[in-house]
View: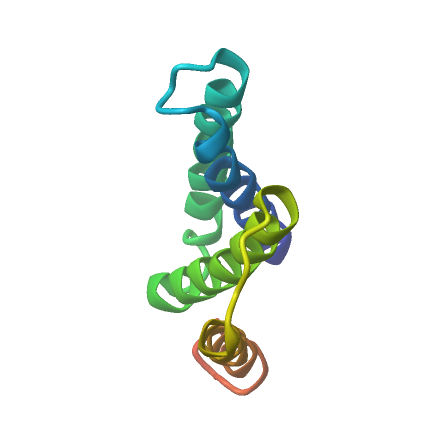
Length: 109
């Protein structure tokens, strides 16, 4: 169940962070609500995951996956373009998340 909570935390954080641009400095009501609710849900689910798994590893997965997904969302919703070094850097972040999940014994509890 903790990996479901982690996935929910990541999705909520991605939605909230992507909505930050749309809330225009918290001057637009509905996008601001999405940001606030999204971050509240993200930290709630993240706290549930951290009851069972190591903080450092979970935070690395949460932030790494979040960075990659937010970049995709920014490309899709805001037309953000990425050059080769940016794509390489994001690929390295994703590779790190995969290594943590597949090869690390730190998640064994």
